[in-house]
Length: 461
Image 1 (cartoon, rainbow, N blue to C red):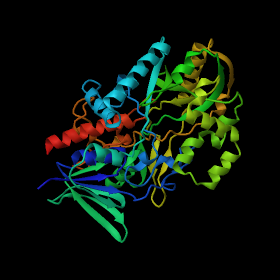
Image 2: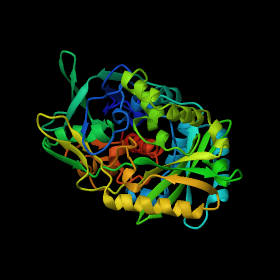
Image 3: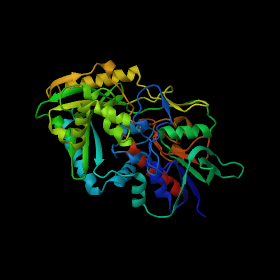
Image 4: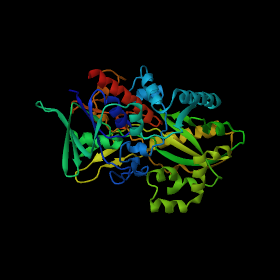
């Protein structure tokens, strides 16, 4: 008889793990809902603007129903900060790239990356290499296409906790379903509910019903300026390069006080700041999750400049113009005071604020950008630092750190890297396990970790 695996959450990692393990284990996925509908009322937040209902979603595929498949590797420095030894991790990154791109597509993207690096890397500046494939994927559908096989049982319900094995009884996942509670027994439980959902499940599983799941980090983002570039500026060429297989966006990465800030240029119509201030400045991501919201539609009608610039960005036509908005994303340090707080009788709350030290680092990195490209910038209109209006980027990370066992050796990604300390047989695989992520979208790294975890579990089976 096959051993049983229960997977909490059918998002990016949960979908892939279910498909990878289906032939070696009896796999059950516990997913919150059947429909693709954003979850607007799960978490409170008083420390800053959340990114479109925290960018969470119901249904098989989870947030990838809305995710744009932006693919970036963490560099070796960031991997080590995340607790991952870069040596030996490259094959898992290769598998992650292959999950989304064919070898021909990846080779084309890499050629563009090398050209961008040759064009702009100088001194301490590096290029953030973000690949957006032409095809946007739902992870559940893509994983089943890539790895067809045995049946995957799906249970729809809200997971409350994982009960560890004891006294000869198997571990089980308890989920609220219509009509009561369903208990899914398993030999291994993989918690893949995301950087906010997973710490809540683990806290309740280990008796922490009143306390902080600390160590949260993201890369908060803010528009900080508009610039007019020289017609022949190299920044136009590298900001967005379209290939037959996808789109390559090059961000300029600066490091100050061991924190990274990445500068992206977005096409603009002119030097006015109205389109990069106020609630309409992120209209594309807002409408992706909630396209029929009357409140958001009214916001758009009140800022047609932002709408026009969003269309320029979406069609990539604006990257041939002279005017650009300057968008920054900053690295955060995992802090014991930042995270998801559980309070009896209340909804969990998220604290993700940018600290004064982080803001100072971002400001000095932006100054480096303006100094480095002073010859390319004909005009600039910069917002005062106190008006930099941050929102989180919805790459919620670090919140499972206190629940996860220390690996056998620094950087080791064996089973101990994923294992929950006080729930034997339970493992975590999502953004909550990352101790750091630089300024990179974490999706590609998480897919690589899912391949690694699946390999470890299959070896044990």
